[in-house]
Structure formats: structure tokens, C-alpha cells
Amino acid sequence: MTVAVIADIVASRLLDDRAGAQRAIAEAVADAERALPLAAAPLTAVVGDEFQGEYPSLSAALASLLLVRLALPDGVDCRFGLGVGEIRPIDLGERTVPEGPAWWAARSAIEHVERLQQRAAPLARTWIALAEEEDAAVSESVSLATAYALSRDQLVSAMSERSRRLTRGRCLGRSQRDLAEAEGISQSAVSQALAAAGSAALVEGFEALVIGVRA
Picture 1 (tube, rainbow, N blue to C red):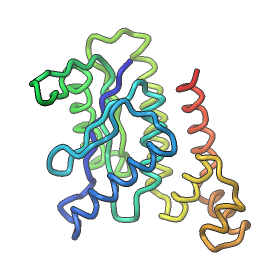
Picture 2: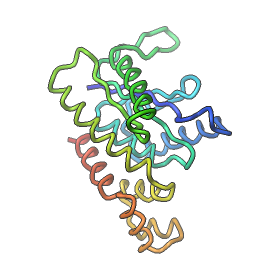
Picture 3: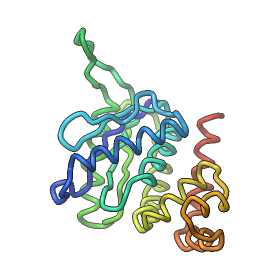
Picture 4: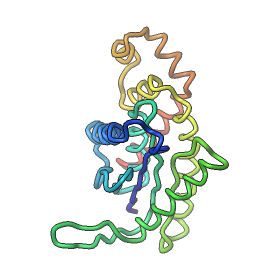
């Protein structure tokens, strides 16, 4: 299955430096791809505060987007609409325009997660929508992935910037000792920060996603 992703900046109109926020997101995306190249087309700024990208599978998209969120500085955050289905780009000669059921589903998904933030789940950042032509087996996978993503969002949204950095490091296989040296703190402090943030569950989930990508 192909996954189209639309991302936008949370509360962008309240930011003092919107250009700086866009640069931070672009750097987080580039860092994620350097660490673990999973995207068919990495998230790229397209217009206003919106980014678009494509991934070959849900596992790839969810793993990469976790690395992106964990790399963002305090004050900068994104929400993500993921659409699962067919992509039919329109060839205009000099460039192609993203199009097709996956993109329509992604647009529906990002609109849905924005509504969720306003009501039932303020810390939600991710929703996954299925294009209408997909079958029931794919629908169940999407439902499970969405439930996982919402739970993950709750943990990440509550983390400090340092906890996110440490969690990202552990996802990428860095030792607690290495992370402690990079942060200028003790290994015990790293361990306590990871435990308080619930990072172990995120790291295990990330590893499961990567295994799924490589299977």
C-alpha cells in the first residue's frame, strides 16, 4: 500500500518565527532520512505551512514521522494526515502534481485530526484514513495503526525537548552512556528521564515498525 502524508504546523499563526519553524521541520525531516531512509518522497514544504510526502508503507511512514516529531524543538510541532491508497500523479511535463485516492484520504485525515485536537484529544497529532477502494483487510490494519498513533502522540506531546532527543537517540540505537555524554548529564539522569517519559514503549514500538519495513 502507498501512503500519502500531509503535514502542517500546529498553531502556526501564533509563532513569532514561522520561517524558523519551517526550517526546523525541514531539518528534522532531513535528519530522519539520513538516519533511516524510508520515504519514497520525503516531506517537502509545498505552500503556506503545509508539507507533503509519500511512503511505501504504513510502517515506514509511522517510523519516519516519529523520528521527525522527536527531533523538533520546543514550540514547533506538526500534525499529520496519512492517506492509504493509490497515488496517480498528474504529469505536467516540467513537474508532476500529487493526485489520487491516497492524497484525498490524507486531506480528510489531517482535517479530522485538527478537529480532534479542538475537542476530544488536544494532544492528538496523527490520523490515518483509507481510500475507498481499499479492502477490508487493509481497513483493519489502518484502524490498528491509528489507535497506536494516537497513543504514541499522547506520550510524545507530553515530553520535554530533552526527553524527545533522548528517546530519538534510543530509537536509533545510541547507548544511554553516549546520550549522557552528548547531553552533559549523568547516565542515571538519562535513565530517569527516559523512564519518566515512557520512552521504552516508544522505542519498542519503533523497533517493531522497522522490523515490519524490512520484512
